[in-house]
Image 1 (cartoon, helix red, strand yellow):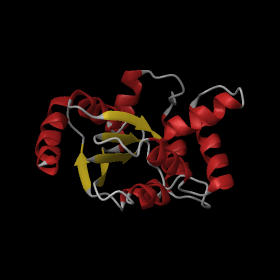
Image 2: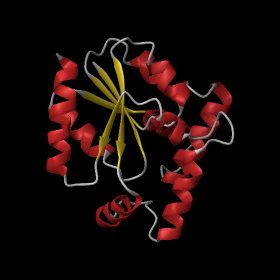
Image 3: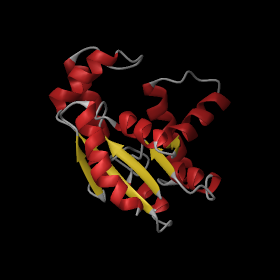
Image 4: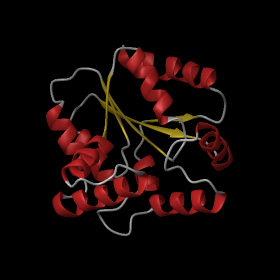
Length: 182
């Protein structure tokens, strides 16, 4: 089974990836394709460059390129989780596999803001206005090279509401994902 993850910043996607890895999945990310691109250009890997690099790759090779690259490299993998799916074209590319399911991890803006402040990850916004502005810029794509989180989330096969603690999230994963593997 292949699972893809989409969701807004600090919604809990990494926690889902970690849980799946602990349960036998191999993890990769659409951002890995961008990181490779940035390294080849000797650019720093930070949030702004990842967004710009993703736009560059999509503009040059089509809106599904990041997922197409991962799909082709991992074609023989049985249990794979792909993080950072941000466009409908990426979902379409991965749906070429009949065992692909898209999971949207959803949490309220306030909960995500609090998580973001607690985790203190480099590149995370440090003020509310920047957090909101970054999020708004990722929701709807101005063209095929941009992120489109709203349209991508609308394609989800599974939606996990993650406004609670990690134990509740893990319980949700047990309920939702174990039956999918049967």
